[in-house]
Amino acid sequence: MNRAHFMAQLRDGLSGLHHVDIGDIVTDYERHFADGAADGRTEEEVAAALGDPARLARELRAEVGFKRWEQNRSPGNFLGVMLALLGLATLDLIILLPLLCGLAALFFGLAVACLGCIVGGAFLLVSLLWGGVMGNPGAQALIGLGLISGAVGGGALLLLLMDIIAKLLIRYARLHFRLFDSANASV
Image 1 (cartoon, rainbow, N blue to C red):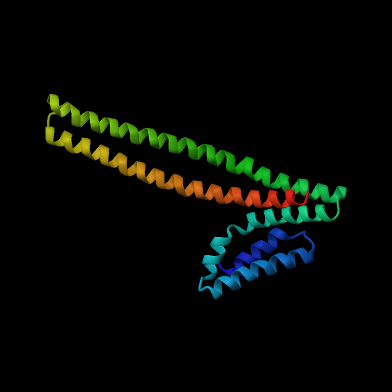
Image 2: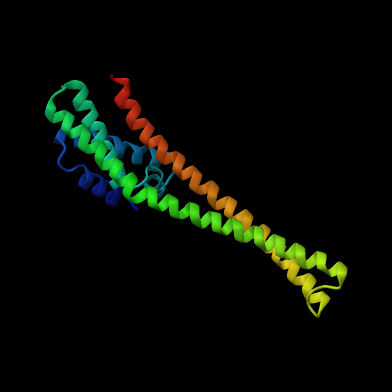
């Protein structure tokens, strides 16, 4: 995603905010792109580092709502803060929670399959000591070694994927923490 596309999506997500707030936010993110260009990064790299502009706009809307509430504690500003928080919470509950549950079930199933392959491969190799369970001992040894090595490789890949997902979740949690920390700092 290039700079123009990112900024257009960010502006769309910020629609409805006061034009001064939108201007401040857009200027800030234009500065991110300018700093990235000065550091030799491409627009696509900067946009990827900044994240999803629609999600970012939702968080920024909530942050602007908090700032309004800090400056003027009125029922209208309170309603704006509550709607912004409900929007973030709804996204978390409706989209993220089922996705995480599905990923956890998938990873658990794959981990059990890897463990099963290791146990099966070890059984085939150990059973060679008593004559084997297949007619061809050479094929049985290759199958046993293949099962074990495939399971070890699959387990390593599974750990790598889990590490990537954990880092993404930490980044996501930090965004929420930053948002709620800025709200609590003013209280």
